[in-house]
Structures are given as C-alpha cells and as structure tokens.
Length: 242
Ligand code: NAD
Image 1 (cartoon, rainbow, N blue to C red):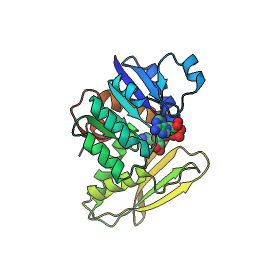
Image 2: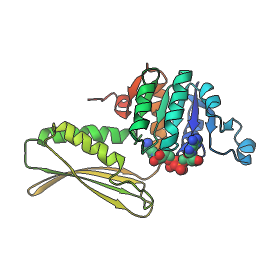
Image 3: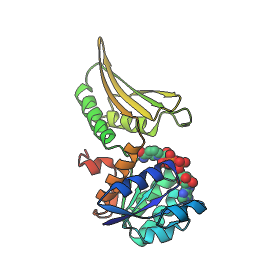
Image 4: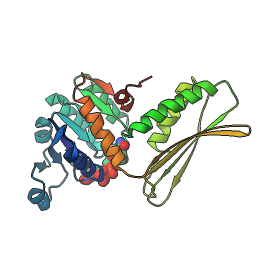
C-alpha cells in the first residue's frame, strides 16, 4: 500500500486528490498539509492534517503538491531531503520554482505537470504529429483556450504547452496564434486548429470535471513512486515521450 502525502490538502484540488486516494485500493493517505489547521479536520478526517510539511513528507512514500507557486521550492527541497518522490501540479512557477524542481530531480523522482489530464498529454502528441505532417504546407495553426472568469493568466499554461508541441512537431515551421476566453465557470476547453484554404482540422480537449486532474495526478504519483531520480512529465506516465 503506497502512502501518499497531500500538500495543499484544504484546496479544491487537494480535497479531490484525497477523495481519489480514498477510492483507490493501491494507496492510502499519509496525511495532509494545510496553511491553517481547522478544528473540524481533527474530528472528521481520521488521519493527520497539519501545517508541518516535513512530518507528512517523512511519513509518505510519495508526495503530491497542489499549493501555490511560492511554496513549491521549499516543499520539493524537503522531499529531496527525505528522499521522497514529488509530484507537483501547481501552476504559475517562475524560473526559480522550476530550477528548484530540477535541482531536486538530481536526488529524487520529480514530476511536474501544469495539466495532469492524461488525455491532454496524448493530445499534445497528436498536435505535434499533425504539425509535423502539415509543416511544409499552407496551413495556419491557432490555439484557443476557454476558462472560468477568475483565471488570470492568458493564454493558459496548457495552451502554451500545446503551442510548444506544435512548434516542436514542425521544427519551428508552424507558429501558432493564441486566443483566450475567460467566462463563467468553464473548467477548461482547449482547441488546436489547423486551417487551410477551404478546410479545417480541430483537435479539441474538454474538461467538465476537475476530478480529471486529481485522478491524473494520483496516477502520476503511483507511477512515480517506483521510478529513479529524474525530472518527468505526464508524457512519461503515458510512455509516449517523443
Ligand atoms: P485552491 O486555492 O483551492 O487551493 C490551494 C490550497 O493550497 C489552499 O487551500 C491554500 O490554503 C493551500 N496552500 C497555499 N499555500 C500553502 C502552503 N504553503 N502549504 C500548504 N497549503 C498551502 O486552488 P486549487 O484549485 O486547488 O489549485 C491549486 C494549484 O493547482 C493552483 O496552482 C492551480 O492553478 C493548480 N491546478 C493545476 C491543475 C493541473 O492539472 N495540474 C489543475 C487544477 C489546478
């Protein structure tokens, strides 16, 4: 039974990940790390919820982080100190945050994914292949993303990752244009459009339930728990890294 520690347990994603762990036969929750312990946690949870990240990391076989960008460097350093595999789905990391993950990856397995949907990882590969095949021909490439009104960054990190796949697939021949919509409670829609004269190919990825990300993050953590030190992404989980 793999023991999973959840950093950011009180957040929307943290709670969904805890639900996925509870529903799995392969793992158990080692504990949750929060910024502030509320009295109801003690009464209802039946496992440790604490502000002491080191305690939970030490008690875990693998750690999943969905917190905030500024918390990640310290948490991944603690995971490296205790030799624990570390999955982070926290978005908005700056170069310092990414550097901290890569530094720790010399000692422990680290998986970073701004989008932990497994099928989105597959769509990136499909977009790269389409871009490779159409690279020498007259097709424009556009990427759209739609998210809820509160999301601040645009284009989304996922839209940019799809764009990187398009650029890499065509060896730089295709440079996508981006367009973003922020409205209502949309969870996440991404489209990669290859448009020629009189024809269009659309690759569309749609998320209607955040559980998709929680499930993907837990799949990634269970996969990562058995890996050697290194820096991984969702492509590696699918075994389709180009
Ligand atoms: P949220 O605001 O609901 O949850 C974040 C939680 O982290 C909050 O409860 C906050 O109190 C807690 N937190 C902040 N700093 C902490 C710290 N130092 N230690 C412990 N807990 C801390 O947000 P969310 O929707 O759960 O998203 C969390 C992160 O995951 C964001 O960066 C978001 O963009 C990202 N996200 C990624 C994916 C993905 O597929 N990888 C999907 C959804 C959200």
